[in-house]
Every structure is written in structure tokens, then in C-alpha cells.
Image (cartoon, rainbow, N blue to C red; front, side):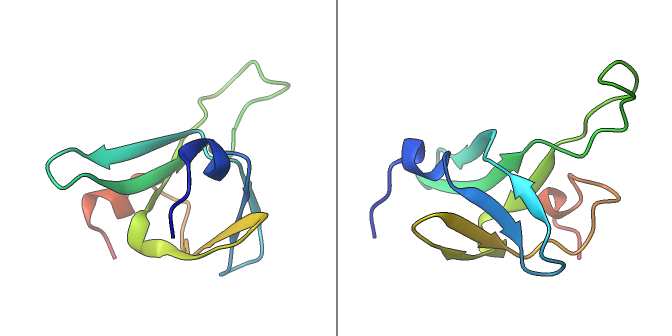
Amino acid sequence: MVVKISDLRVREIINVVDGRRLGLIKDIDIDLEEGKISSIILPGVSGKFLGFLGKEEEIVVPWNKIMKIGADVILVEVNTFTDPRHEARGGY
């Protein structure tokens, strides 16, 4: 299957672990040596009060945690949000 990145960016990301809507793809990480997408980056849950205080952490989902790419949604398996970059560093 061939899909444009622009097509992926408009599909909502759903976590199959808890059914939570995670939003749209904010960015992607590409492994230039292998020529493959290594992970997708989603906007994180903000600890901000009315958007002023706190820092928004990104959610990094490794490509192997993408369960299904559908016509309208992308299903991912993300078990924890305590450290959004945990999986990208090889955690679990």
C-alpha cells in the first residue's frame, strides 16, 4: 500500500488500548539510512491552564505500534503516557 504523508496527517489517531482519541499526526521521524518512517509524533496532552502554564509533551508512537491504517483513522497501541518518548528510546 502506498500512502502520501499528507493523507496520513488528516486521519485521526485512536489508541486501541483505551479507545482514546489522540489527535492528528504532528510530525514524523524518518530513518534516512533505511528510507522508512520510524515513528509518528502526536501533540501531547497538555498540563496547561487555559493554554498558558505548563509544557505540552509530544507522544511518539513507533511505527511498529501502528496496528491498522484505515480510510479515516489510524489505530495505534500506546500503553502509557507517563514518558511520551519512552517507546522511542526502546522502552517496554
